[in-house]
Image 1 (cartoon, rainbow over the protein chains, first blue to last red):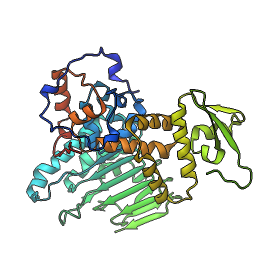
Image 2 (cartoon, one colour; image 1 turned 45 degrees about the vertical axis):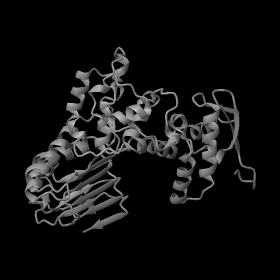
Image 3 (cartoon, rainbow over the protein chains, first blue to last red; image 1 turned 180 degrees about the vertical axis):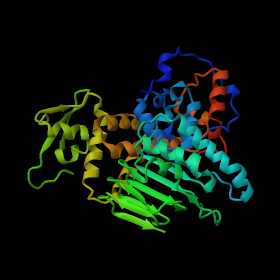
Image 4 (cartoon, rainbow over the protein chains, first blue to last red; image 1 turned 120 degrees about the vertical axis):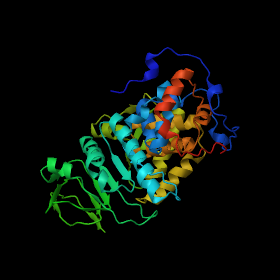
Length: 238
Length: 163
């Protein structure tokens, strides 16, 4: 499983602070939090504890801890929660969104999905206005990843209500449906939320079997047939 | 705040520096590790907790008693947790997170981890290194390579190192 990089390496004492960007002078406003004797306790916490701490940061912040030192390198790749937030400037134009921000977001998710190590994913959340052209290849791959890692909470929000109104809608990836014979069998799924995914192309019915599902939020239930959802208590449509 | 009514079962916990603590079973079983021992019938005598020192165990027991005295009200439990952790320094938090991990107490584990994560939020790499005393053991070339690989994590990030 995870191998602590630092334990296999000779410790080197090379200060590289001079290569870092000039950070502002530090003020410790919260005195109670100052680490007294300068001993690095946090890096010596067990790997599972540090991964737990990282899972509570945003994905970007968790990943950035790789730069701290060897013992933090790629630790974030073991977190069980993947929440891909959209960093969209509020004044971005529609063209920028389609031509630049969208592809960048897709690239970021792809890169994470390709290198992520955690075998169990509790949370997989996509939040970005992606149109139908992305449905087949990237989104299919993401969903396959999420289901192969036994995702418990899946959120696929391809709208952006605060940002703008737009007419295009994404479709549930046909490829994924074709492969699964129209029956989606989600053993570990507890919560499912789809936004702006309305048309189930070419389908008369999509059967969802999810014995652990407790919460379902979808834009439309058209063509969705729920099978084997004994735990479902919370349904929200629209 | 052990209940005075009836005869609540009391457990005796022993820290790794041989301090003994009495605690109501109903509070102690917040720890899954202890609960399993109770269920397996191994909790008759003294329960040795080899990975927790007396100071930390005293604090954990204060938390166990405090949180179990609150009825099922997530808001109140949360505000108790916030208050309980508000005056703890990092050394204590590090001890607590280790104890919570060992004792398998998810609510305490989550609360302490969140408190530690909060300190790292919106801070530059340099600030986090200095705050926690993390030694940068990369060569300049290695650090440049890691930064390049994680370039996306620096995009659109505003750090707030003053607080």
